[in-house]
Structure formats: C-alpha cells, structure tokens
Image (cartoon, rainbow, N blue to C red; front, side, top):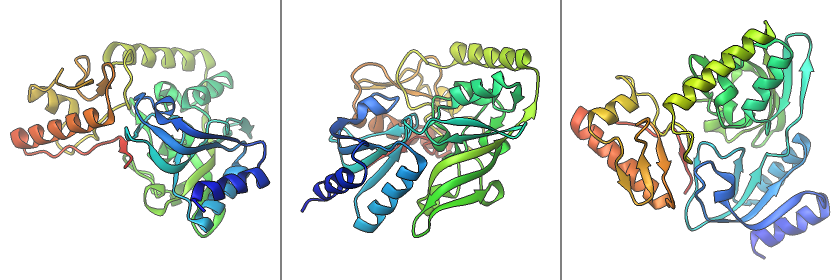
Length: 303
C-alpha cells in the first residue's frame, strides 16, 4: 500500500474533520509563489491534533514536511512526494498573565505583534513586518531591525521525535542567529509563551508603522520572494557584497536579484525553482570569486 493510502485511512479514521488536500500546489503556500503539487497536504486544527499526526508519521514512516506561511521556503517545480503538514489553522492567541502571551504555531508574526500592541505590550514591534508564522519564526530565530525572537521567547511546547509533546524553556532552545535546536533535532513548535514588557500602545503602533515604512522603502515587497535570501556573513552584509560584484538586477529566467535590494532574490514573473536555484548558485560563485566570501542561504531549499 502506498504511504498516502495509509495516511488517508488514518486521517479518515482519526481526524475526519481535518482538511486533507491531494495534489495541492506548493506555489499556493510559499511566498515565492513557486512549487509543484504535494502528494498530500493536511491542515490540523489544534496543537494536539498536530502532535498526534506527527507521532503517527514518525511511527509509520510517512515522508513529512511541516510548513507555516512558507515565507522562507523554496519548493521544487516537480512537486513533493511528501505529506505536507500546514499549521495555518493553529492561530489562537491568549494573554498569559499581565506581561505575556501564549500563541499557537500558525499565528502570523504580524497578527501576533498587533495583538501585543493592542494590549500595550512592547517587544514584538520588529516582527510586525516579517511575513512568517510564529512556529517558523521560533525555529529560525527570525529577526529584523535589531530584534530577534530569542529576546521574547520564554518557552515553547514542541513535538520531539521519540518523545511527543514536551515543554522546553527558552534557554534550552539554543536560539542564536537564524538557528534553534529544531534545525538539528527534527522537532516542531506547537505553541509558544512570550514574555513582553508594558509599554505605551500609541508609541508601539508608531514604531511598527515606522518600521513598515522603512521596509516598503528598502525591500522589494511588491514582488514574491522568500525574504532575505542570504545569511549575514561575518564580513559585512550580503546585499553590499552582491552589489559590489555588480550583480544587482541580474536575472536567470524569471528569477532576479532585486534591483531595489540586492539581498533579495525575487520572482519577477513566472520564475521556477530551477531559475531561483541557478541564480543563487551564480551569485554565490561570483561573490566568492571576487571577495573570497562564501554566502550561505537563509531560505530553506526543499529537495
């Protein structure tokens, strides 16, 4: 029996109300707007349902990919012979005491920051313009404009292979530049407790609006992309190095090094995964040849 028939039988028996989509294009679930069909895409409705699904996938050996907003993901043109688990329905947020929040993994960072602002809690302003979900933001320690998730994450409920759902304190997560333990141990964030500080709601909103203006002015938000394409190297900034090498505006097929911000590879129209990968490789090669610096990708390229 193919694995997806086994999964279908499990889902129908255990979670008859869970949305399961066969052949769902990944282009609908990534901010690059690139990617062929997934064999199955499932959307669990709660952290508990997600954890049980992950445990079943581990036990049965179903090939798995967990995605949130797909804002840091490049999916293959030919599709995925996998069970793609989408966290978009895990979107509850609730206050946790007077200075904290508890939110499920699928909550968008923009909505989370707005929720905090309405409660006059400061610390998440930097996250308002990051086009990702909380689970993915914790997994990669997302950050912008001097803020990072490690500054506000108090603890997480996570699913770990061989263990199931466990609570991990912030200090256990090894949150550093674009890194967490989940990149190494195969764990998945189910929900997160955040610790914030009291602030002035109007001042918080003003700061969020200022950061939004700065993003619109400097980043190519009008075109699909996976966000910042390359990690910040130890020597300088990726965008400056790419521009220094004369690569700003360079294209391969429908993929382009943004003419607005060289740190972004964008889908300028009809780009394929192959176009983006070829352009990234070309930029990496040219920058290393001319500067000796090897650029590492920040986006996750799914094979």
